[in-house]
Amino acid sequence: MSQNYLKRLFVGLLVLLLCCMGLVILFDPFYQYHKPLPGLKAVLSDKEYQCVGTLKNFEYDSVIAGSSVAENYNNRWFDEGFDCTSIKAVRSYGATADLCFLLDIAFEKQDIKYVFYNIDPSSLSAAPVTTYESTGCPMYLYDTNYINDIQYLLNKDVLLEKIPYMLANSVIGDYDEGNSYNWAQWKSFSEDMILSQYQRKASVQEMRPKDYYQENLEGNLALLKNQLERHPETTFKFFIPPYSMLWWDNCYRTGDTDAYLYNLEAAMEMLLEYENAEVYFFLNDREIVTNLNNYMDTLHFSAEVNHYICNSLISKTHQVTEDNLSQVMEDTRAFSNQIINELVLPYEDRFLTEQP
Image (cartoon, rainbow, N blue to C red; front, side):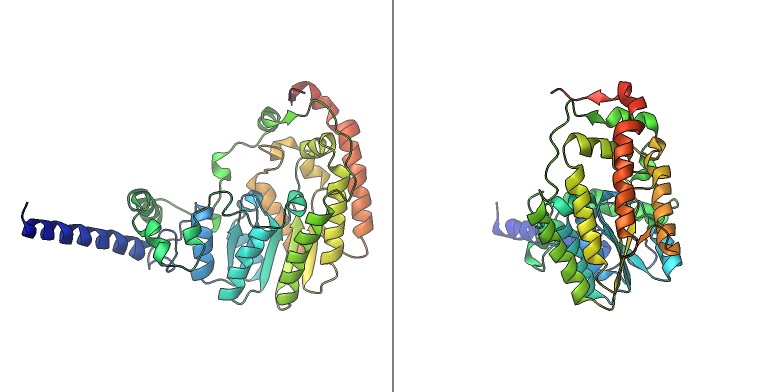
């Protein structure tokens, strides 16, 4: 094989690689380098790959932060209700440290008017450390090292799947940019669905002490305090979403009810100390929580419930204040007891029971 042939082969391969890299940089489906090109939509469906890039490069003044239950909000509901331009900072697990990591990026890049922050009860008891690396997220997209972006720039899935998908959704059909990361359109929400998914514990564990998660709780509250104190010009609207009554049943049977209620009260008490924080509570909304047709499993509710929550933030219903916090918690404890002792009983013969 001649040297000229090898040289031409090398040059040809180099040109091919440069062209591939150029295509990825030009269209940039993960938005690592720029916002969408003129005429193209922001097609957001892979939060682990796109969330960081959009926070770095998009134009916005408000953030919708939360777990998978926050993904089905339409950004336009917030934009119209609060006269803002919102973007999602979401993470499936909704760990406090993960969401604060995303908020740090947002605050570094933009002046933020509002943070709409979904607090999952489990996020208060989880370890106050980020989980991106431990769960296999593409860390080359999360850092500022452009050298390791080669994993993005020379990725056949990006070239053959992600770019065509972005172009197709931008040019063909009626893709709604407000429904970023939305998954509800492919799911079924009904009593039959949630009952088919709920595997009830065969036995009831001893109730844990209310301060069982105290160390993690303090760590997570410290992260939230840090956000509030570093950004006094931003209004934080924290809200605890309405999980189904089967979630309450599971909490009781795993011995977590008292600890979760303690965590929630402590969190709201702390947040209410700050002038730039508002708190909204939906776990005791009987109309939603007891209607199993709102859910696909114990946690995940339909987009109609998301819309209801957003409208409640706009109208300031379900708001918790220093004056009514004790009443809200007393009502929630009573509601939890009613669920365990009365409301779930008619469904017991339909539960899938885990083996002891």
